[in-house]
Every structure is written in C-alpha cells, then in structure tokens.
Amino acid sequence: MLWQLICCLFVFFVSVFQGIKMDKEIVDLSSVRAKVKKQIEKAVPDARIDYCLTCGLCVSGCPASGIEGLDPRKFLRLFVLGQDQEILDTNWIYSCTMCQRCRYACPMGIDVGRIVYEIRGMRPKEKRPKNLQRSCDLQKQSNSTGIPNEDFVWVVNDVLEEVRENEPQWRDLQAPIDKKGALYYLNQNAKEPTVEPEEMVPLWKILHVAGIDWTYSSKWWDGANYCLFTGDPQDWEYTVRKQAEVVDELGCRYYINTE
Ligand code: SF4
Ligand code: SF4
Image 1 (spheres, rainbow, N blue to C red):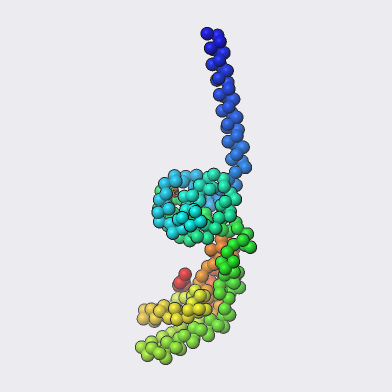
Image 2: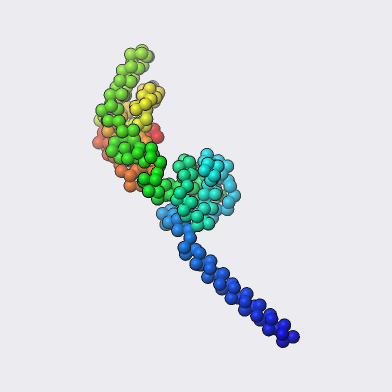
C-alpha cells in the first residue's frame, strides 16, 4: 500500500513539473516568433488575425486564391504559425488585389486586403515589382507614365479636334482644361492619353450629353494611385494632396475620380 502511494505521488509531481516546463516553453516560443503578426496588430488595431476560424469563406470569392500556392486563409495561417520570413518573401501579396471581397464574406470581419497593404509597405523598395515602384515614383513627380504635362494637353486637344472633324454630331463636344470655376473636376488614368487616347472620348460624350460643366487640369491630372499599391502611405497621401490642391485652385465643387 505504501509503495503504491509513493508511486502515485511520484507520478503526480512529475506531471506537475512537466506541465510547468511546457508552459515555460510556450511562453518562450511566443516571445521570439510571430513578430510580423505583432507588427500588423500594432498598425491595424482591428486586424483580428487570431479570430480566423479557417472556415474558407474568404477563399470562395477571392480572385487570388491558389496563386503562389496561397489563399487568404493560408496567408493568415502563416502569421499565426509565426512564419515571418515566408510572409515577407511571398509574392502572393502582389496577386491579392486588395479588393476586400474577403472582408465582406468573413464572419469575423477580417480584412486581408488591409493586412496585405501593410506587408507590401514592409518590403524594401528595391525588392518590389519594378514597374509598380516605377509608376509610384513617376507619379510623385507628375503622373504615373511620366509623359510631360504639355503632351497631355496636346493629346486631349488633338483627339477632340479629330472627333469634331470626323463625327459631325459631336462638333460641339468639349474637353476643357484648367477651366476656372467648373462645377466638376475630372481626373484621368495616365495610360489613356499615353497609349489609348481614343478611350478618353466616351466619357467626354457622356458628360456632354448630361450637360455637365467639367474640366481637366494641366497638372496633377493623373487619377491612378500607384503609391497606394506599393503600400506607402506618405507617398500616396502626397499625390492625392497634390490633386486636391489643383481642385481647390480651379475652384471646382466636385471631384470625379475615374480610378
Ligand atoms: S472567412 Fe474569415 S474566418 Fe473564415 S478563413 Fe477567411 S479570414 Fe478566416
Ligand atoms: S483582398 Fe485579396 S485576399 Fe481578399 S478577396 Fe481580394 S484578392 Fe482575395
């Protein structure tokens, strides 16, 4: 009987000791792993990465599912499992369009697109997709394709003249630039005046038929926001503020963003 009691006590103390040891190990691991998750939780207070149920609802509507072997659910698991280097290295963040469809499908309200935005910003500029970074850098100077502002003005006037000549029913069509006091300010994706100038015309026609008083600007006219896609808040705020200054200078009441 005494021998059995000693055995039981021995097993009990060994179990308690192992339990304490396991707790300590868990604490030690969490202090060195998942640093990227902690950074995200600091930048996005409602990130709720730990709330993910791995239900997969986000995956069903995600256009980036399966690309680079990832989907939004797997992406979140990398954070939870502390796979920091995998998160920082994956090019899946450039397949995610940051469309936020997953956010509306997610029962826990997790916004994967917002998290992707932060991770994009953590990547050093020299390791980002070159064309994306170049477009942002150009936009900070003027517009994302880098064409001179004079060329933009010339292309708009040239295309307008061509439409008026070739389509008599549109001989009164307007494409004003720097028209002070116009009610609406219209921006323009830089790709169109650069490589597809005829694509600007349908919107001009719609505004004409609707009787809208509008204008372009001869500077900061590009409506794209490439610095948002690189994940650089200071840079995209700079380009948006430049556009806002132009709208104020012209005295327009409404801003039409075509992007
Ligand atoms: S829908 Fe939300 S909870 Fe479900 S797997 Fe996706 S992120 Fe996790
Ligand atoms: S934000 Fe990204 S992860 Fe979410 S649905 Fe869109 S592409 Fe997929």
